[in-house]
Amino acid sequence: MMKPRGTSAAINNAGAMAKWGGRGLIGVGTAFSIYNISAADNHYRAAAQESSAFIVGTGGAGGGAVVGAAIGSFFPGPGTLIGGIIGAIVGGVSGGMGGHALGGAAYDAVNGF
Image (cartoon, rainbow, N blue to C red; front, side, top):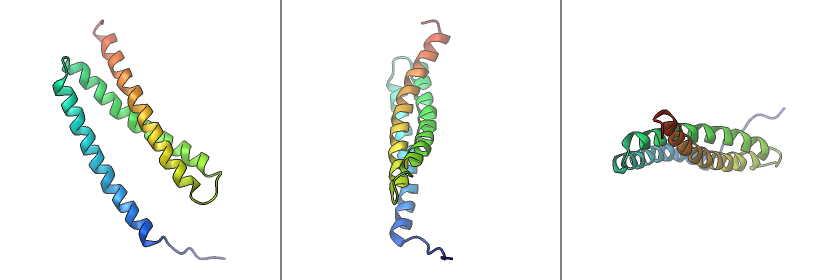
């Protein structure tokens, strides 16, 4: 039976950078959302759009990562990792765009527009 060997230092460093890079990107995204809300003509509609884009985009990224990793696992080696990354990006972007549209539509439906 083989004993596990552990990961390389490069992989560990990449994971640490991704952890802090992701937190930084959340901060940048929040700053953009605050700007979009403050610059909008209808602040409440913009807040509905931005918040739903964040929530649905986060869910889309998680779901996309799972699906992408599952598809990538059919390709030995780094397929699972690459599939998970691509799935997270595609799921996050499409979820964010869909959430933005959904938030605007929900605001319009509630306020009778």
